[in-house]
Image (tube, rainbow, N blue to C red; front, side, top):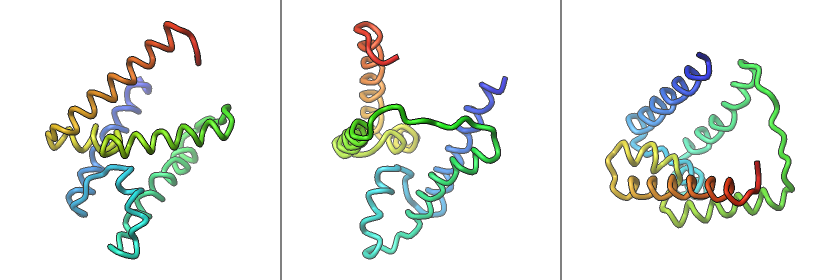
Length: 139
């Protein structure tokens, strides 16, 4: 039962968090936009971005303290991890936002652009898994 409750509660918390962000700050909760806006802190005084990202990262450690969670070990070389991060960043810019912005906030606002983007990146992910399973590769 725990395997069903944890994702349900996580989804509820995500929904609550994005709703609170929109209500109190008037901002859409897209992680790439929030991260990208850090570079303009001196211009728009958006310190809330730093607090948001600190909570995003710090929440993992709080969860780890509260719930016995195994350590995650990176088993890939750092150049591969860095390349993967750069590719994700490029895709985020190319797609006009990240999966959280499009999939959670954009669809909730019935944004046609977000619906199309979400369908495309879900289809690409499904296709990638099928190709890897058919032709072998990472387990």
